[in-house]
Length: 310
Length: 297
Image (cartoon, rainbow over all chains, first blue to last red; front, top):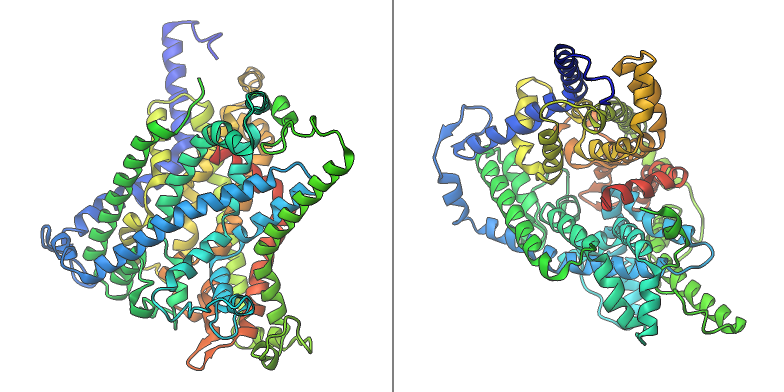
């Protein structure tokens, strides 16, 4: 790059200006898009969150009224609780399952790519299909899952009808799609230097200690990344609970006892069914705040459990 | 890093153990044990597909038979016929295909341009914009959902396809990031040589860089394909007109007051899923490379 720049100060400046223009031109789709579809809307959303707004009339300023109202809204707390349960139980189990599957896939056997493909396959299945399919699998009378449980003389829960079991149903659908996480873990496992295992073995470490002392620390940066991605996704979970609770399109069902009403579902209902755009915007900002705080907490804690080389 | 050593390295669990046990039979047993474990895992992931397929070929009497039957007694195609007759399947399919084409097109036009600017061109604010790309990936879409809806509503374009494809022409942060990582590995010498030969910046990009980036472009294309094909939330928000439904929101047709018609629903679900599975089977390496690039830095 720098070889013939210094032919003269004026020429260099002209060339730099040309380069800058070309760079901006190449980046322009994103620069326009980020202003129109992200930056502008962020500012607008902050403003709407301080107003009452139903699209048909112009926004009416209410100050922090929407935020105050949230603290007295039982459904808001319900939605927060439902989302929290799905996140606190779902995400760690999801990561653990993905890691176990990845460890299995890391076996050096013939046909490994086929096994990997089969595990990943559910990840490309449309969420709608996956949820409808699991609605059928979890059908309390005729579903495969309860028939298997029955054959094993285990209790057969009413997955769709019992408020206690609707969240496990959502988690099962999510767990079915852990292929992406497993593939990322698999790639991380392959990066662990082999001599570390050999050294551990010389020290007399068994399989479990090799995992504890070598594998787990070496893949901990990936675990951190997956944890953050998983938390963010869990905070936004929408399609699976929406479709499990759905009776007809656009119905505002939150499932039995609103046990499926997640944060995003309640936000969606407020925005597009009740047309409380201001209230929905306030909910979006609270969600954003929760996301930031949780991410910050995880990042802070990561100093204690994430191991970086060098 | 050094891919050569990585490729030679044995995966975690198996490492180094067979050196101590040179006995072939025990090794074969170990291999067999591993296959058993893997088959069990894969069976768990695959079972739902099997049930979907089998249910789609069953008559209602088989579907609701007590005691349960795994296989259909009579294999029937009536569910597939009903899937086509009880909703405008062809129309929904056409809508979904159109949106996939437009979105993949938009992504392939815009994202490499931006990624190239971020990886290889020098301009003021480049670092800031890259940070913006990264933060935009973290932003919950709910924050911008309402104002973006209002923009489309003001333009009178709610209940059209515009909101479902136009944004892709302005670049998607995830793909920009993916392609930027790829472009960074293109040696500067190649670009410099093209410039010395008198090629303009756009020609260098179009004739040298883009052809080199085919694998990365393919990765972006297959991911965009699957995302658009499977997208549920955006059509749900923007499309109200039955004739403009995509397959993902059209499937609700099988939910009636009388309950769910599981046979036709499973048939329709199967047909809806098949293209996503096919593209995965034929483009598997792009999926895997996309996941490892963005997942592992």
